[in-house]
Length: 177
Image (cartoon, rainbow, N blue to C red; front, side):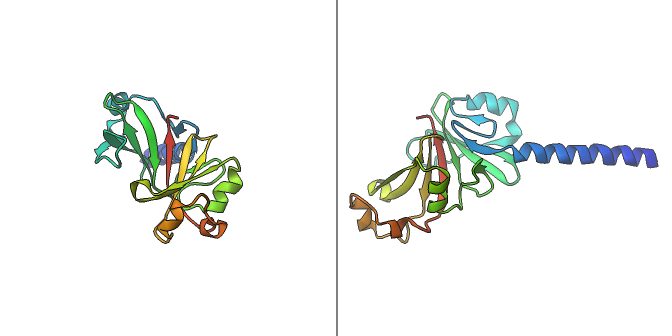
């Protein structure tokens, strides 16, 4: 019985350590988050890993259908798809998935700029207003909370630096650009 308990414990510890290693490999990268890639077929993903994929309400105008993909209990992304099931965007709303440079949801504007100096500022009043940094090396947008921002500033040609500093990323979206 003691030998059986030791074998069970060894298998359990191997399972836990292997699971942690896999979960730690989930990064935001160009065209992908972990093993989820832009352009992949969500229906094949559902067939292969149905326990990790759930259909969810459409998040915004571009996607016809969206799916939640759960890497583990702490890491979930939203897959925005075309009607044929092709993933065209991966949306990250939780703080547990970051880039290899350790930025993501919850990071500050200045952290994104420091990690990706080639970022391009985007802002405007469309769709209720938006403020984001486009990071070409990721084909991704880091969007910031604008609730405390004077909406009139979004109509200007430039935003004052003091309006940008300290802003927190609230969503990251990787696209098929």
